[in-house]
Structures are given as C-alpha cells and as structure tokens.
Image (tube, rainbow, N blue to C red; front, side, top):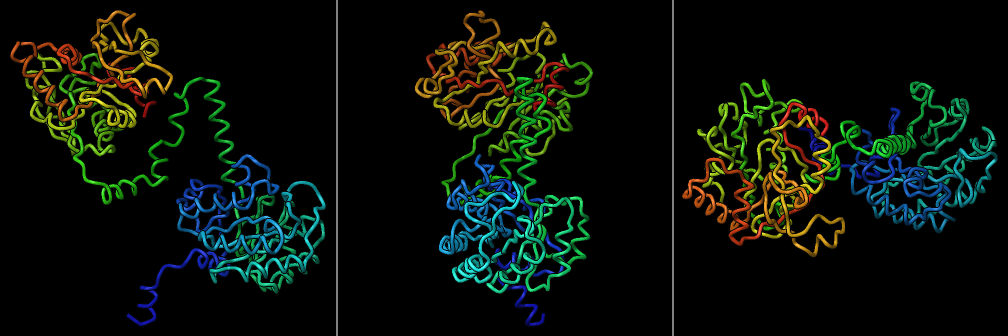
Length: 557
C-alpha cells in the first residue's frame, strides 16, 4: 500500500464541519434536507441525506411560535444540540439575521462550534426577521454592517472548517440582480464560505440570472421551495453547489398528524389507524433502544432473566379447518404463527428461556428459540395438567402465559414492576370486550373473570398507593362481583414458583389435575392465605378463539 493511501485509510473521519465544507466545494450538486428536532434529524440521516438543514421556520413552528425570532437563539441552540447528538451528518443552521448585531453573532458561532454544528446561514435583513415569503419590499440590512457580522462570525469560530453562508435577500426585497451581485461580492470578501441566493418567484428566473452573472468567487446555495417545478438538472447545469429542501418534513408531518387526529376524533377508535402508521417498535429503533440494551449489558449488574412457560396443548376446535392439522397456537397471523409472535414479545423483553407445553399435533410446534415439553394426555387434562408437565421448569422468576394470546409489550413491564410473589394481569374493560365480540364469540366462549380487593381506578394515585389483590378467579362469577378479566398472563418470583409447584403437587395428590384450569389454581392459592397481586390494564390484548379473532389480530399487529 502506498504511503498516501495508507494515511488516508487510517485518517480520522472528517468532522461534521469539514463534511459540510466538502459538500459546498463539491463539483457535484449536493442536497440537504430539513429537520426540526432530534427525531426528524435521524429520519433525514436514515433516508441517506449527507446533511441537515435546521430550518428556522420549522423549528419555530414545532415550538408553536411564529418565524419572527419569537424563539430565542438559546432555545434554538437546545433543539440543535439534540439534533446534533442524534446524528452523524452535518447540520447547517438557519440563523435568521444572526439574532442581533455582530456581538450576538460572535456568541452564537462560538456556541454552535461547541455543540458540533457545522455551519450557520444568516440573511441580510433586519432583526427581528420576517419570513421571506410574507409581504413585499422587506427592508435589508446595511451591506457593510452585514459584512462586519460575517467577519465577526469567522473570527469567532473555534472549528476552522465551520461554514458561514450569507443569504441574499435582494430579490425578496425587490432590489434586483445588480443589488444581489453587489452584496454577494461584499459578503464573499468578508469571508462568507458560500452565498445563498433566495427568490420567491414560481420560476427560477432570478436564480438563473444570478448564476449567469456570478463569477464563482464562492459556492452558491439555493432553496427551491417556490420554484419547485424547475428540473433539478437545470440547477446542475447552472453550477449551483447545494440545494436545500427547506421545510417539507414539517409540512408533511402536519398533514399526517391532522389526518390521524381528525380520524381518531371522528371514529373514536384506533382500529382504522394502527395498520397505517409507524409501529411503536420503529419509534424505539429511532430512539436507539438497541444501543441502550447493549449498554445495560455492559454497565448494569447481571441479573438472571425470567423464564416463560406457555400452555399450548389444545387444538382450538372452534377454529374448524384452520386447526385440522395444527394447534391453534400455530395458525398464521399476518404471515407468522401466533406462537412465534408471542415468543417475539418475550424475546424483546429479554426473556429467552421459553418452554412450550405441546399436545395436539405437537410435531407442528418446532419453532427455533423455544424448548418444548409434551402433554400426551392433553385430551383428558386441563390447563393445570399441562402446567404440571412443565413443573420442573417453574424455577426462579417465571412468566406463565396461554399460547393463544397477543398483548402489548408494556404488559411485561407492568408485571415486572408490580410487587408480590404472584402477579396476574386483568383487563378492567371486560364489559367493553364482551360488547365488542358480541354473539359471534359463540356459546362455548369461556372467560376467566376475577374479583379483587379493589376495583380498577382511573386515579393513578390510588393505583400507586393501594396494592390490588385477587379474591377469586373463574368463569362463573356474578356480574356484580366482576372487577376484570384475566388475560392469561402471570408472573412468579422464585417464591411464587415454589408456591405454584406445591399447589400442583397438592392437586395431583387430591386427584384434581384432570379438569382444573389455571383460575382454579390461583383461587386455591388465595384460599390458602397467599397474596396474588392484580395489575389492571385497559384492553390492548386479545386471544384467538374464533375465526373472527384472526381479523382482529391482523388489526392488532
């Protein structure tokens, strides 16, 4: 390898400011995209853009204020710090008029360099600024005073590659080409690294006239918001260095938020919205949750992850031909088996040790990443009989779950945070669930109702201060006694696992495993003086019992 090539290969990556400078000096037309907060900045980088335009209009609008310097430069700086921390590409800041005179400019540039911002664009109008697309004949700053502001900024930068772009408002103010060229030369002489030629015409006529008369003393930047129909190839032929897509992420987000908000308000439901919007897991990805997980594994004390036991021995005869050759936990839900989706939920919560109790068509349950135990007498035993087959795996902290349920990830978080050796999740909206499913649920639909020490409360203080405990669980509770519906999910501590194993042994000794369900198990445990904590949820789960449930599952995911 040649020395020069070796040096290039081992050189440190370019600073963000150097990346922006290289874009301005590139012989090719470059593009940067608007962002107004850390999330939109990550999206811009994710899309493949090499740089970000931190739009003053967009940042102001995101704060709910006008684009008239109503947001202070320190408030803008705080937003920029989040944007810079969230991305690895350069940010060119829309610095309005520099937030004052040369002294304000000096301090702003110094702070931007400290925060890793690559450059600032300032416009030659008066402070406080008025958006260029509002009104006519806006007054311009004195040319020499503005040139002094540029010099002050260049003298104050602590990063030698920090860029100052001088925005020409001569066309906006109706001053014409001669004024634009005169100011552009003055600003270049003052040290501007580029000039931004701005126009609000619907065509690029003024831009092209400027380029035809410009001597290329410094690169030229444009913002084609108004003349968007001009072919991009025309900009290339004209020799323009950088095009800014200036406010389109903000405008697109307003359209999407209005449509979503109005629809939810109109329909009073999320069912029509969820399939068409970004998933929460994608939001987590943008927030960098994966990196946090890696950091936790490095810096936090190692704790044994809980295991899970999933009861999936039944066929699900109500599903008819769908379960003719497979148990209902393996029916397809949007391209994947139901059990695979349940296992994914556990895995995402760090629960890797998942044991599935098989029975009907057991050979079909062969997913990677799970263990299996068999209940070969599934036709003659109930849920506790299946759980007894996995008795020896109920050790330490353990999650118990039915194999035909789907639920939101935060259910596991609520289980983990709740006090008690045995914790069950109950849906407080059990009445609404019954009304939603209606007659199509069928006569054989069995629901595991609960009665508790306290009913569900919408007062979060009550929920924090008062631990809710189980009194009884089963399908035959009186309507007036029901406080919720068990969703088929529970957590056991090491002590709770021991209690459950002892109760399984007691029921086996009494010959009561054959028909007993888990509600019977939990009720017996309560009757023997053990506390079972109840965590209330409000919907956001479902079980697959009928063919109609599959359609609900498609909307749920």
